[in-house]
Amino acid sequence: MKMIFKMAWRNIWRNKRRSIITISSIFFAVFFAVFARSFQIGVYNKMIANMVGMYTGYLQIHQNGFWEEQSIDNSFIPDQSVLDLLHDNKDITDFNERLESFALTASDNLTKGAIIMGVNLEKEDGLMDLSPKLISGEFPAHTSSSLLISEGLASYYNMSVGDSLILLGQGYHGASANGIFPVSGILKFPMPNLNDRLVLMPILAAQELYAAPERLTSLVLQIDKPEKLNKLKKYISKKLDLEKYELLDWKGLLPELVQTIQADNAGGVIIIGVLYMIISFGILGTLLMMTAERMREFGILISIGMRKSKLILTLIMESLFMGILASIIGISVVSPVRYYFNRNPIRLEDQAAESIEAFGFEPVIPASLDMDIAMNHAGIVLLIVLICTIYPIVTILRLKPVKAMRT
Image (cartoon, rainbow, N blue to C red):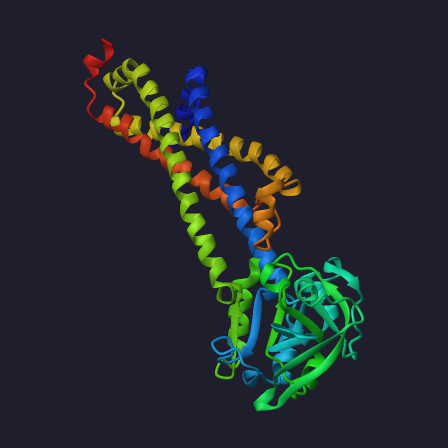
């Protein structure tokens, strides 16, 4: 076997021109496949980060059944064991307590339905990045009964900081939830659904408004390593009483986003598939050329006693060596390119940027640095190389030494 390895390696460099052409075709296959897929996955990761960081977080804990029927009656008082579980886990950087409900807002002769979120504003600033979105006023104190309202709602009522907003709703177990609250600040959200109807207030004030002391509708878990999400979810699921609580990740919280990514990914797979078809014909063409040029060599080797099985194995090793070498070069060259576009993403402008921002996404196209992308596509290209090697293998099996030496 050692002899075959040596022979295969030497054969590659006996005809440098031919080998460089083959290695170049494989190199470009790896480079363009990884390059294209990195941008596609980078866009998906940015979409997820925008949506998750805008509102839902990566994981949420509710009372069992809350997500199906999002009523304040399905709120809960978290057990100390649940809080200890979240405090003790190093993968959870923090968790946000929320009390969410709906209410009719009113000012003068106008009314509008709104989402009311009672939150710890300091924690929510860490998740939703509220400080840059504050276009007027200031955050209310934790014990205050003031509100932060979205820009769309403020514009609808022609309201500014210092004005008051009336909330009319239904509290816990049918209690009345009415009050007049001063506006301490105005927030501008890039997502239209939130910007038109979101009201934030300190959680203590929300619990008092809805007659739900100490009650929460959700615990939003903040994590700084999304790649550990599945492992973390499994761990918490084992420790959590799933008859009392439900644990949902962002995929369960944002099914529309999952479907959008799946639909777009299908189109991306088709494009990558077309690229691989072109790549396959390029690699096959170089192997056809190599086989045709070496027919006389193959005939001589078989004539002097070399078994066809060893010749085939040598040829496979040659293809693998060239494929591995080209893959290493391809990954080495594409990695700094990916890094550059990860740190300096392509920024969309004009109408393209406006249409993306309308859905709450940042109008940029970054490249992903996930090494799995590079390794997976290098593996696929190597598999294509091996499949293309079938042709020279079949040629050797059918080879007539005397006829081959005459070519």
